[in-house]
Image (cartoon, one colour):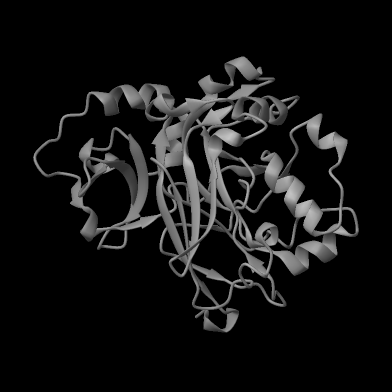
Length: 309
């Protein structure tokens, strides 16, 4: 199933799932208030609520809307946290080589992550504002998993039990801000603080099972800027599995439903890795489109800070 968050014509924000290619179910309205009106609360009791969803029978047209009648938002507009990992070897190697750096052996010892700003989430169709003083704006093509069950000290082989589903993630990066702050030995922080976009929906993990391959899934991942294909990789090339990432993240820490685990950038999945000879840094008016097989397409347009009202 594909779970979504959306705004209706009356301005109310709710959540639900795609009934088909043209319709969405408002789960709170359609269930007569039995199901919550947001996905984080749904995830708090996902095992119980999924039993209701799987046996849901529409009651006429109550809570059923055409996609043309609603505006999709980020499926988790305010996730409980975002941990973004660094799990694709090709990206790490190439990005370091482009900065004149060798690969570090510690990267092969542990999956590492940073915390991003969970209060700066954008969804499909939303504008991305270029941060003040940023001249090197970049996209990053990633896949994310959504935690659906509380757990601590989760083993790698049990980690799949704690995953609710997957979505596309764009880890926007102000590379010039990032480069300067990381020279101090701390970060990334301000270079990533301004925005992360996710969506257009969360695909439940059962739908992903047929595509399992290696440590990941056989999913082609693409990025286009203004319609031109720049990045293309495959999720199956990931070095660290989501199981390994979750095991690392939950070591001595409790993970909660509604937390996001990002994969890090797939090989070729950003301008930093491709090089400016392939494409300049992003500018106002650019449309960035991320596409992952079976997860959909996530589009955002870049705007300057002075365009924000």
